[in-house]
Amino acid sequence: MGHNESISFEADRERISEILDDIESKLRALGVSEKACERSRFKIEDILIELIANSSDKAMIRITVKEFLGTVSVRLSCKGRKMDYQEDLKELFSGDIDEEAESIIRANLLKEYHRDIQTSYRGGFNTATVIVRHRKKSSIMISAAALVMGVLCGALLKSFLPEETSSFYAVSVFGTVTSLFLRAIKMMISLLVFFSIASSLSGFEDMKELGKAFGRVISMFSFTSVLTIVITYGITQIMPIGNESLKAAASSSMKFETMNGASSLSDIFLNIVPDSLLKAFIDTNMLQILFASILTGIAVTMMGKDSAKISEVLSVMDKLFQKVV
Image (cartoon, rainbow, N blue to C red; front, side, top):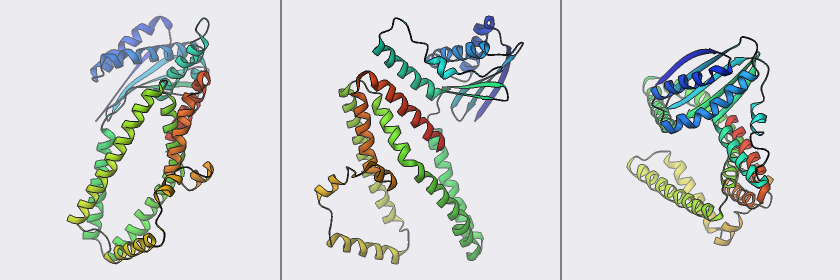
């Protein structure tokens, strides 16, 4: 499930090649592909140069190669004055490069580095973590395991505890935690969706490619929505779940609402466009937020040389709200 191995080297520029070779050998031992090793080598080399440039006298660089649930990372730490790696990164492209080309290259580079590299400075130590290989299916496995554990926990509480005790745990303990969790997610989900979609769309330079990607996303969304409805309906027919009296009341209410003013097709389309963008976020109207994020992402791609700057801001905001969640 996990692997953790640490090594230490003197903070000496002459030993950078040796350090990189040692790190690469450990990455290959964990099954990291040659392409991923080469891509990460450049990032780690840049960080090593910065760490050594800002290190204290006779400082040691501690390197930890870690694998957990499919994610492989390299953590580098060294004592010294604070380094500003992200600021130094922006100075990599300067001089004779065309201004527009420079902004595009820099934006793409920064987006990748923001995603794969995290830096911090605590207690006089600079620390940088480089994600070499992202996990693939581990999140699905964790979700499936959590689902099974939840079902088992609920079944055990209902089977082996008195009704009053099981009700207390269901309502006061698990119910409270569930409500807190859902409120926290709802608090952030609107901003997360907006910046995630807007930053993804702003990364396209060709509108044709954007159109193709958008078509694939809509097709997949429609397919998964229909599949979810079919599976849910099938499960409820095989294993009736819920309170029959509540089901009847809900059904009656829906019929009443439908008969007394069902929305027309034009109203449905009109509701996609919000009267106020702020109100869409306050009401957590995901359809309106989705529309606004798509519109923003497309607009950014049409802003020429300024698009790289705005795309970088959207990417950083996306990373911020992912971290909050």
